[in-house]
Length: 50
Image 1 (tube, rainbow, N blue to C red):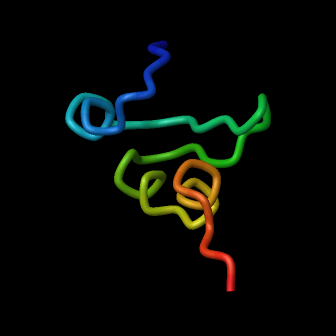
Image 2: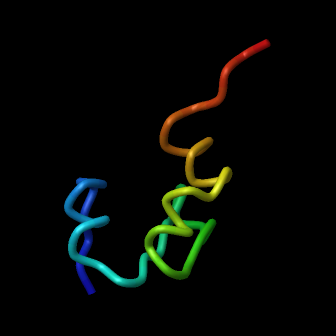
């Protein structure tokens, strides 16, 4: 297990990724799929207010 907040290194190194948001699992699976998951994007990039 590695704890890492550097998304670029995660994408290069890890085949599977688990993402937690305030201790709650929001995504687990192949890294490319996890990084493109809308829940992950919303949690870490925010959402646009309309």
